[in-house]
Length: 137
Picture 1 (cartoon, helix red, strand yellow):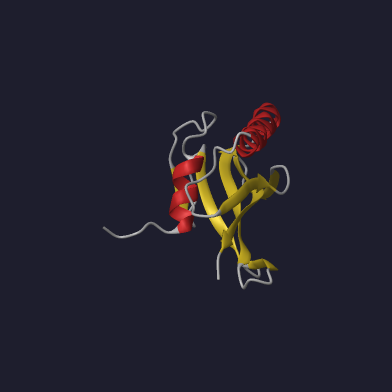
Picture 2 (cartoon, one colour):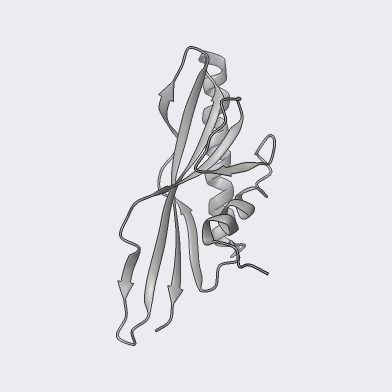
């Protein structure tokens, strides 16, 4: 059986969030339909810390992107969704309910959802996130 990628494990974890309307999250692809979700990896130096024993704390940074309806009333709902999602991630981290990545230290949101793109009727909100994990020497 082929081992899952770390991004696939993170995707499956985020799909358990009760605030997702359809529960399906894509990797590096956001559908044009409202309430579509995607995880889009951010290019960063993967090494957070190097330890004397040769082990390393590594990171994966990514954006959790949400395609949503765009209007004055919808924007209030979208803001509430972003708050609920970031609070959910915070609670999962605090209770150590984390993605099943060996050596994982945390999953966290690095900011709130902000609009990164709009059309007349839709907007894409992005929440920057980070997963850190320890890899022994």
